[in-house]
Length: 409
Ligand SMILES: *Cc1c(COP(=O)(O)O)cnc(C)c1O
Image (cartoon, rainbow, N blue to C red; front, side, top):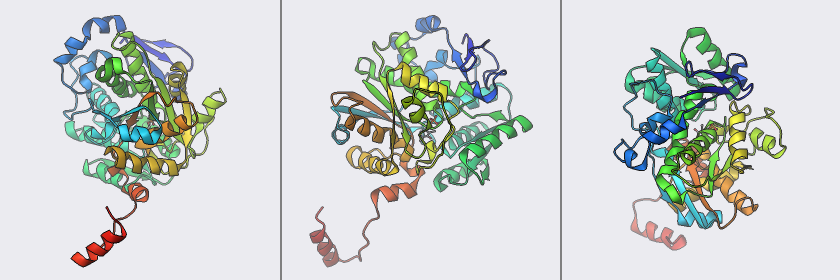
């Protein structure tokens, strides 16, 4: 690490205290951590990486980890990239791959950020870690904290899906449900961290966490090498996931692991599309309403909007919004046509890709990768809405035969 720079005022800071925003700008001034890529280039080679563990720590030179950092034992990262030819046809694409983030220990992309957050909390001597989340950041933090014996305090808005809340409780988190929006829940958590001195894992204002998310981009580059896709589609709430993925790809380009960079497709829900609007109108963020069944991206005030817009603009990518029905359709079709089961926000990137192809933003000849950011088991209600309910029959051969005659398999 060489230091950090404020995304708002461009002030530079030395590489310490990298767990909060710019002291001058407050939460609007998200920091961006910088690394000495020349030194990293000497340490990281394909051959050298070969002998390292296949998890997110294989890129330790590019992570804000203190020397000899203790990390949680859970296996985070090196998730598979699956080829999905039938789903590609559905999306209108020549080729489509899925990076399946549901394969992380608590079944979402967020484990990448919490891994780094918990390592930094341990290094800093924290005993309590906290975050606000609609569920995935929360369960990943609670799980990682449980694995090393830290206590976790989690603020969730009332609409958080029950399976996610159950996951938190099982991990022994202190769960505080907030009767309010996600944005209000987030503000309450910020104030509580200040008041009680808890380690704040809110990814948007804690720059170290985006570095954890970066490992997704580092992996895509290492796993695919010369076959790096033309487009990478990511669903967007606060904007940390797309920003981190892009940063990882960019660093791997700088380290010569890949020869060109993909374009980033940011996907939001129609009911929560402040970044789509800012992108289309070429202006800064104006917070807006947030309503979508994709709870993980139900964000009206994306805290990391500058990094998210930068990722899409720098990569000559695009932002699109998709209605909830298209998200449910993507949930069903991803399952049916590829065997990958994503939660609504997990497949929103896919839904956006299909729309971007239909609108000519993404070429039909493109080679695309969608990051499936979280498991469908996180939101069973939406899964049933997407796929329907099964028939119930008596244990009777004639009844089965009659049913199959009506509905052949
Ligand atoms: C958090 C989350 C996102 C969006 O990430 P942001 O950093 O908020 O943009 C997308 N999908 C899932 C499953 C998530 O949990």
